[in-house]
Image (cartoon, rainbow, N blue to C red):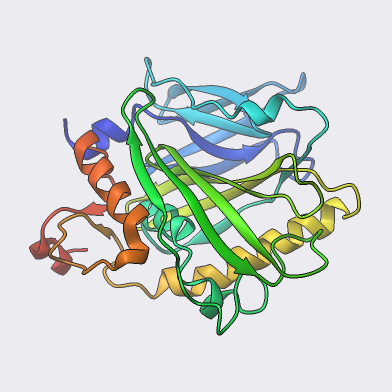
Length: 287
């Protein structure tokens, strides 16, 4: 199966549910195809592309669509049913990079002290301690556990620096879920996700979403904090060469801190999920 046909099997976020700022007809792109999202008088939505109706669902405060008549099921986030959490759709950030690059960057903690200085990391706390990465064959997901890093401000609600413990899930090629230490409670973890809309192989729209235990911060402040983090990442992402994610291990040399990235790339190759990827070094000239 070629990369575009494989990519058509998944669901992609295209808008926030009940967004009052969204026009009745909202034009965007998915997998290189122009689509129009129509919001009807009764609040229901439909997606049309070249006269073809695409399926839609609502999940995690977002509208998702797919060109497939028989798509893969959307992944589950059990924490989305915990009603005492605050659910925070963080808007959208457009990035001139492969959608797979955006996901990989989300999985990388080594850049925290240098890109998110005095927020998610700081010098001299730059060491990435050993952690575990596995591919869950039953769920077909990449899982990274025992990831720990000192963070001066792990969340908007944090009042001081803490050693934050992370668990990462990659349940589908263009989505990643992060479970992390909650600054205000010891018995739960906050959830931060990255939902990626592939505009095409070299451009994407990123829709962060959070499920937090935070009774103090305003919605606006929580959104602003998360958007600040990702806007710091955008400059790095847009300057990476090549734009697409290299799959061939000879194209980029990993370090010990890149275990999750290595597993993610292997998993993509194993699943044939290569839309937005480079599979051979010669592709760099075209990518």
